[in-house]
Amino acid sequence: MNPLAQQLNNQIQNENPAIHDMLSSLGKNLFYPKGILSQGAEASEKAHKFNATIGIATENGEPMHFSHIQKHIDYAPKDVYPYAPPQGKPALRDAWLEKLYKDNPSMVGKSIGKPIVTNALTHGLSIVADLFMDEGDALVVPNHYWGNYNTVFGVRRGGKVVTFPLFAENTRFDTNGLRQALAEQSGKAIVLLNFPNNPTGYTPLEDEAIEIVDVLKEAADNGLNLVVLLDDAYFGLFYEDSITESLFGRLAGIHDRILPVKIDGATKENYVWGLRVGFITYAAGKETLAALEQKTKGLIRGTISSGAHISQTMILESLKSPEFNVEKQQKFDIMKGRAVKTKEILSDAKFDKHWTYYPFNSGYFMCLKLHNLDAEELRLHILENYGVGVISNNQTDIRVAFSCVDEEDLAELFDLIYQGCEDLTNK
Image 1 (cartoon, rainbow, N blue to C red):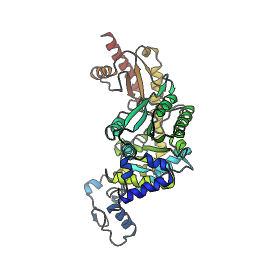
Image 2: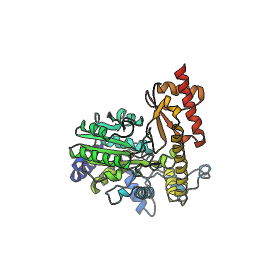
Image 3: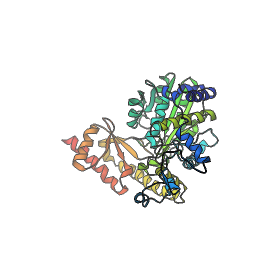
Image 4: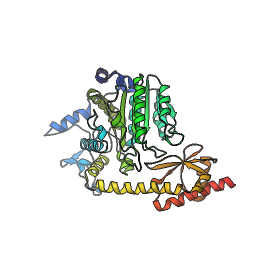
């Protein structure tokens, strides 16, 4: 093992042995090398005469670039063409942390690390999987979950996906199901909670959130080490009486055996999916936070090296814009209008013949549970015959993204899904 990795491991071990034990074999071996980037960072601060370190080209005192590209860009070349640091643009990290505190008052006063920039959410999940999951480790998730978790944690890292019912009697979050799933684990488990949930569009109510935190603490009290991942991809899109903060703040510092990790980003929150800017934020003791940042930087350096600079600049400028809050509220109102309209449409008793729907109160999606039809057969039928695209999650469930259908078109959408059901029922 490299001495730098061992030093980081000792740093974590001395402050919190449980978190040290949560690290995967790869996680224990990770470190940030004192190589070109670290030497270049030192030079950028002190080399006032010549800086001949980083592998970029300069011309007339600024990064060399093509004019036919620059003419389409409003940002200065220095904020576009050079490499961003592996951990992300410093001002962006500061701005996102400020946003986190504003949006999540429960985080204030807790020992929280500075957000580390990722190439959006999936990259963040992949980093955490590499850091903490060994072959055979359990990933505990609700039974309604994003299918890409299988690739990130199962295929890539050899994890074992353990599910519990998201809903108890199709009405509320099944905290007893979570408790039972955790009781069946030993040593360590990675718990992944995604609210607003993809695919169902559900976020827990206040009493459910309290129960979730209590169940996690109970499992930790019983000796289980927990890496709790909060996939907050759709954060902020809360339309009804759900909690409006991430569970991250409530979990920060509640138990030495619980390591909360917040994974979020501008992609879906701020409608900039293609810019691929996400963040990882840890909650732990000061020394552990410093060590985890170094390991995370080392992992980023060893995979993508660093994220796109221009995307980070664009997100930073957006967060600083006086128009940010105004436009965000405008888009929220549109999204909420679609969710409310969807519930209004589905209140029509005629639909009861073919489906019920899972509770939803947030996010981009909702799910229909078919009574008698095969979801994949229905998906293909309405796609081929009515030009309607939906997702079949399993044999019974259809996911509908109201996020990408104008409010005035939602009634027709569900009527066509209903007509497809009628066709298959009467064929």
